[in-house]
Image 1 (tube, rainbow, N blue to C red):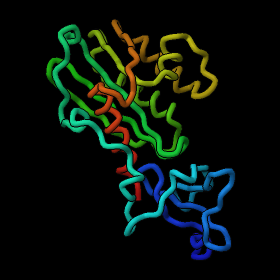
Image 2 (spheres, rainbow, N blue to C red):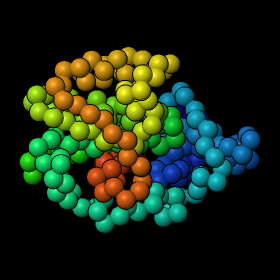
Image 3 (cartoon, rainbow, N blue to C red):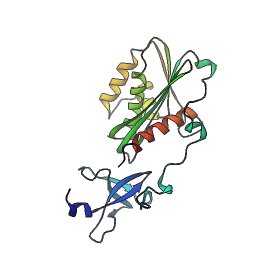
Image 4 (cartoon, rainbow, N blue to C red):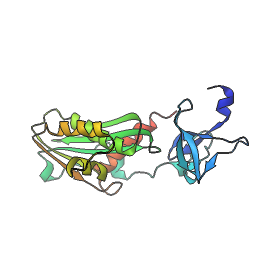
Length: 222
């Protein structure tokens, strides 16, 4: 993009990350219906809408504290989660979460796998996507990471959307190929159960998965 084109955009903060906001001829953000037009990368063709109240000026080039996601609990910040309860000791336990800055926008996944005192964490940026795509991809990656599919597996997600599609026979209207891929993988497990947990609450493993998903997005920011 040439210098003139770049002058039509301003670097600002949005939901804990940096975005480009379209400017009018007076150098002010273009507003329509209480929303600004934004891009995550200056050379991308697609533009998104962001609520005016969620877009803030940078402070010395950095995202201001008020634009960052709420701090996590101490449990979520822990490098290693607490031991599993007795009824899950013989299971491979997976906690998954997806995050998206903008919905659609840059997306990331977080996965925590535990078995017999061992733990594996996955934090991966998946490119541009929606929150639902991130949630489903986190589940796919979590299941794909299990090598011994004859063992009992218990997967926990805070996504009602994913639960409906994978356990309640909802018919996928979007993300059809992704849902089919997950269901095909699920069929290869001898004993797999998926449970719904409340997101951003008091479940330390769900909070940890969320932290890993957000970290994946932030690691790709300019």
